[in-house]
Length: 77
Image (cartoon, rainbow, N blue to C red; front, side):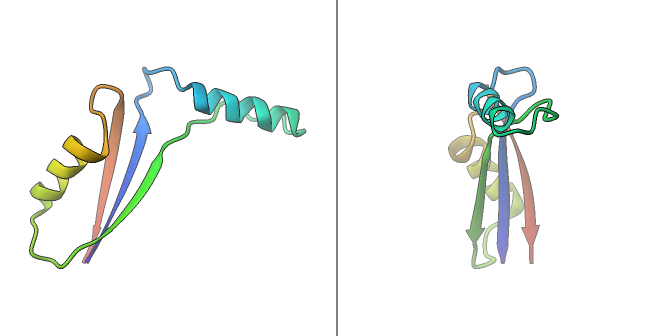
């Protein structure tokens, strides 16, 4: 079983890394990019004994900062 976790900054939080990426893209000749956001992609390989609630707990407590980030969990069985 695999779980994919996507962690992104909350929309309400300033993303200086995303702004730097957007500016670099502009300097590279693509000024049409309006915004960029930078996050994390984490893939977990699981043995199937854990519950989805346990995986959510790990995502919330270890893989993301709930004050500044949101996460999305996709479990593939």
